[in-house]
Image (tube, rainbow over all chains, first blue to last red; front, side, top):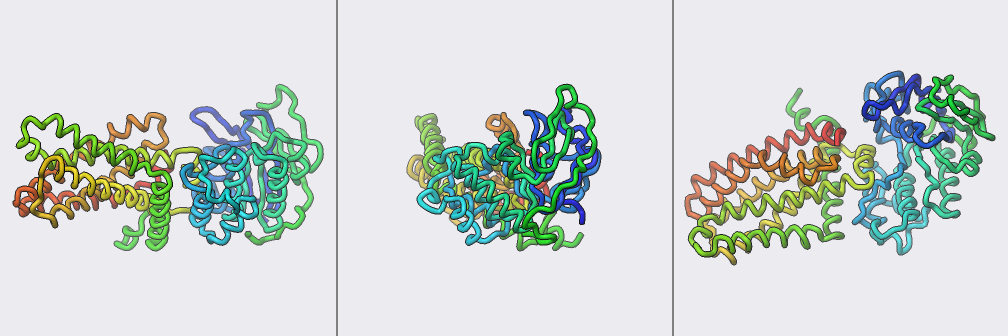
Length: 250
Length: 238
C-alpha cells in the first residue's frame, strides 16, 4: 500500500531560506508519527508541506496519493492542520465557528455538535465569542473543527500546548480514535514524555532534514554539529498501528 | 471551453460554487450580527462624511444640492474602503486564511460569498445615506427606478472589485494603507458613472442616466467574472 506521506529529498523554501533541505519521510496509514527536534528545525514546515500550504520546490512529495509538486491544492480538503494559530473567527461564537468550518468541509451540523460535545464545548461555552475564550478553550475549539471534519491525515503542531491536564489527555485519546477510525496522525511536540508514549514512531527533524527515526521508546538524539548534515531516509520499521483500518478513510 | 465551463469557474461545479457562496455569505452576515462593526462604525462614518460635506458647502446651498450625487458616491466609496478592510481583516486574522485554503470551499464560491456580503452591507449603507442626502441636502430624486438600478449595479461593481483587491492586500502588513491606493483608481469609473446616473435621476433626465447605468452593469459583470477566475490564485498569494 502506498504510504500516506512519502517525501524523497523534499526541499521547501521560505523566501530564499531552505526550511526543508532534502527531507526523506514515509508515513504509513494508521501510524501516529511524532516529529521532534529543536526550534527552527523544520517540523512546522513539514506539517505545512504535508497540508499543501508550503510548496515543495525540489525532490518528490506525495500525500494521500497526491503529487504535491503537481497539484498541492488537491490534498488540502483531505487533511486537517492544527497549527499555532487558531483558524477561528474571533467575533463568532464557538458553535458558529465549528459549524461553519464543518459545513465548509462537507460535514453535517450534527457532526459539528458531536465534536463540540466531545471537546467539552457543548455547554455555555458554545455561545461564547472566540475572542473571549482562553488559549486552551480556543485550542479545544480548533480541535473540535478537526474532529467534525474527520480528515484522513491529521497534522498537529504542538497539540498539547495551552491545554490543561484533561485537555492533554483528550488530545491523546483523539489521536488514538482518529487512527482507530482509519486516519493517520503526524504531530510535532516538545513535550516528549507525553508525545513519545502516544506515538507509534518518532522522527527527528534537525536543520531541515530528517536526522533519525525510531520505533516507540527513547528518541534518537541529535548530536551537536550534525543537525545540518544530510540524513539517511527515515526507513525505520514500525509495528502495525493498533486499530487502524487497512484501507478505510474515516 | 464551453460557456458552461466558463460559467463554472476554475474549480468545482456551479452548484458547489453557489452553495459555498451562500455559506460564506451567511457567515459574514452572522459576523456582522455578532460584532455590529458596520452598523456601529461604518454607517456613522458615512453619515459623518455627509454632514462634513454639508458644513463645507453650506454657505452655498445650491452647490450642495447640485453636488448631491457626487457627494453621495464619495461617501459610499470612502465607506466601502472601511467595509472592505473589515471584511478581509477577519479573513487574515489568526490563521483563518490557511483555514480557508484547507477548508475545501470553492475559491470562486468564497469570492461570490464575500462580494455578496459586502454588497448587502453597502446597500444598507446606501439606504441610510439616501435618507441623509434628503434630510441634510434637501435633494429629492425624480427617477426612483434608475436610482435603485444604479445603486444595485454600482454596488455589485464595488463589491466585486473590492473583493478582488481586498484578498490581494489581505496578507500584507501594509494592507490598511495599500488597499485605498490600489482600489480608488480602479473604481473611478464607478464613481463617475454612478454620479452621472444619479444626477440624471435627480434632474428628471433619466434617458442619459440609463447609458451610465449600462456602463456600471458592464463594469460589475466584468469584475464578477474576473473574480470567479482570479480569486483562487489571489487567495493563494495572500
